[in-house]
Image 1 (tube, rainbow, N blue to C red):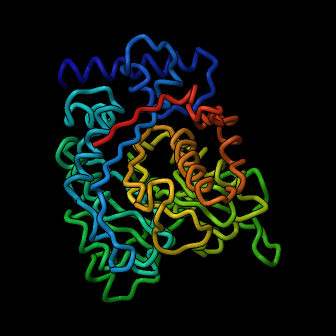
Image 2: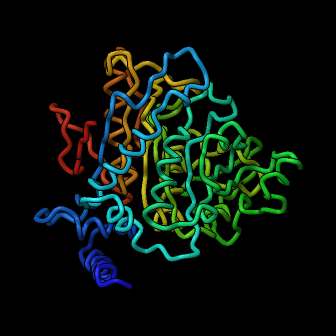
Length: 392
């Protein structure tokens, strides 16, 4: 262990002790504690340091004409990699990529698994639905491999509700593993060496305690669990997308874990957690220690965006002159990140003369200590969220 690593680990433990003694609500992840301690000097506000959100935008990140498919092939992968690495440096208050990535993954040990959860909800539509871009996954995985030293085969890209098709895998240039529902064919399981792979199954020792009763359409009680892919991993990276939803304002970082939860009846659809229990269920899932304590990084793919409440392709944004948002949002705080995403969605809604749905789940998450939410003032600026903006 280097002297620098020793100091960082010591400060990490000391920060956890101070947070416990300070009376602050628990829930800062290990990585958030590191940035709270080693971030910009002179702030003195640990929650603010941990709740930094970096927005990086480059108009050249996408070149889609909104008619040709697959739209993801219009993304400039090299530019996206630069966007992500610049935002990681800003997030970790480091001058170079290697030091920044290592700071966020200071707890990583050789042999541990990193689970990456993209938003694949519309992936069943091929690339005619808005999903996390392969270019963003390549940038995230590339950072883990190049700077943190994680072997490609120790990285798992997963979604417990959607099959991850070949056309997506072919665009990921790393030899990572995949975990998906059991709808795969026998030949597919042989091809991807997932025959007998039970990581998508519920870990019955890791139940999610829900604050509202969860029942099926016949009224039978349903229990919720973490999947083995999460309980067996040491680190999680959350990769949501910039979009609205038919039941809530923002299908962002917190709601992305609807593709994580497992149900006692074996079904994969998270429809059991839709209204009237949606807001509390989103918070309950993200309060579980397997998510709360293991999440090291959140990268929202806002290269494209969708305001329409139901699934479909990305849309032109009036707020950006008819172009795509061409933005990544990066944070350690899922509540703060979703709050910033909400402001972008609200900007577009205003440009279209529309109104967003409720974001009550963000208020509940804030009260539960999952992160920082605030409604912006008349000037649109944040007071408690440490907002950093990068333009390339």
